Image 1 (tube, rainbow, N blue to C red):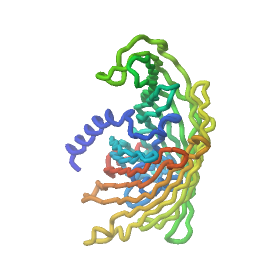
Image 2: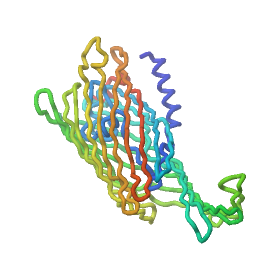
Image 3: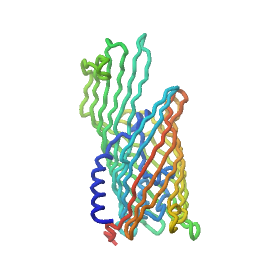
Length: 429
């Protein structure tokens, strides 16, 4: 790759970084709980295999960045760059009513490079969580119908710096230090149909920021001359982040011409620069991968999130601990094949199931998805390798039982991966 093209990529990355920060990438009513729908630090390569991550080290000839376990960074032997986008279509159903929503955004921008022959560092920008919903619940107050209107928008992004190192031929460790930042806007309005009735609306605008840490271990062992197994663990600290914002309650008359907001009367509450702490949960993932290098792999992960410890200031939103499983694999028919392109493609398949941290009216909100994807190599030269990675999730969150909302979603992830000999001379030997 010429220096000019590299500079174009770097410039594009800087411009894209502006767009990846703090976006809302969901239309789920379940994002009203906690800090929203948690994205998970995964690239399309992982997502196509059900989110497999803990034991994933070097899944193919190409170097990939496995953010979900920083111990894997030590397997990176060449500078690696990955940028990706996301698009998702969701069908929301409740009773006999349904609607479709679509969300899209830049998904990630990450780098990794070797530091020594046994270590590497990684840094980048990825989404952390997202809130985005707008729904109405109607009820009768006396003889009058009142609409409770709930809405939210915003997201939290994560800028991270991580390092992984081999402590021995088989054992590696790693850690990420991350800065979370973003803005969340949530509103609730109570509106009467009668235009002579006084309505109210409360809106909270919060900026969130803080440091978090996650860490990982991997142990690699041979099963025979061609097949090895990697045992992996990753976890995150239950950090506290700061929330600073305003809370404004206004009263207004509904105006048939101007819509929600109407004719303002007064403000009954106006709190500025309110500061509180959000206690994030501790997360754990334990898993394995069995692999024949550059040919095939399969593995599984077990996930646990201690969401019962989540707090928003002194408020306990009564979330429950989450559990999940991820199962997936990859096949590359013949990485050295000449004349048959489809033999050098990575074919990925997976499945995941989660009991989320949400329990509504004694009903667990579960989600599941079938996943699949491809890794498509592009023409390369002696020092630079390229690949396009696709990942797809077909799944469901919630159900129609007990008047709940059922979400059926199709999430598409696309990324461009480049391995290049930038900074090929090790900083330390």
